[in-house]
Length: 426
Image (cartoon, helix red, strand yellow):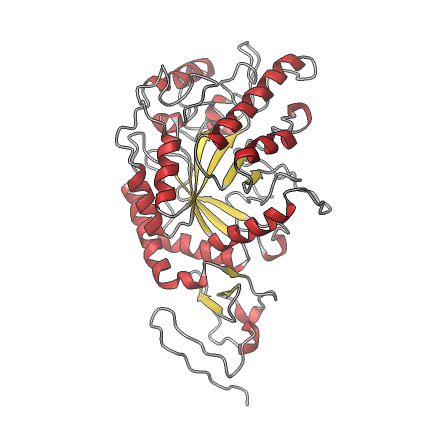
């Protein structure tokens, strides 16, 4: 049985009948646009970069996996106290969103997601709902990072989206300030204390209103904490979506792992679906460049070749790929990640025609094409073949496998030279 990391929430997708909603037609068009983008970047950034630990997870006492072998503090009470106080230290003076955007544009990314708030409750934007934020009274860094990132990435031509955790472990209306053992869920019975939960729902709705009203045009609202929003943690998601689309009528909402109306596309985490696992909805594989989503000292990074192979695999199956980048506490992107992204960008400069605006071949690839990946342009009668660097590919591709004929023109994208055909077996 495959071991699943503790930070991967299991999908609640079920076989659902397609229902028609007011946003259905708009989403058909917007999701086709999303599928054209193919390649995105997600930044996990916050106090956990200062601590150099796996995002917010060590704060959750029940999530022991996050502290195993690398606890920020041995005692959970000390860990939380010291972590919460990192707001006074986190001061990314070297943060230059224009440089980030320039690098990501060169890397070939077409959209960017940025952390407005992770589970720890620390906000990277100027919320009025709490002082636990960048630029607040407790923070030495008096800038609105979300605003700077969105402005820079839009100027660079990338679509933008906000990552927002529906759970908030700093909020007194989610985790009570008492001695109960805390896990990722709300720490009290919401049915016994509806007045507390109502205050939390109001808090979340107000923050969604802020993000979607004060930060210009936003393409995606990417909602994490796939245990929060339904059942005993009911966030009135229909109303939340209405609030979000009041100022952003064409917003794509991704209520991750929750299924249903507001999970407009699905997001397999740290995996690429096999052919028999490909979702029926539009989808996006989420894979960090390193082992963790945020900055961790001495992280081990995947090579550009590995990531390019992943990109080709995902796109040939009809998905998008989003790569996780974790800026340093100073606000810079590591030299290793910069080099990897530049190499991917060089490859996409040459071969991106076979990636962007493509769709998978209608027929499943056969054993005769093992070691090859295929895409087709969504409008032109053009097909693209990519040879795997990880497998030994078949030496012969039959034209019938890519719906081509002897009259088809086949061009090497690297050299722009036309390739020849050979007749075999008569």
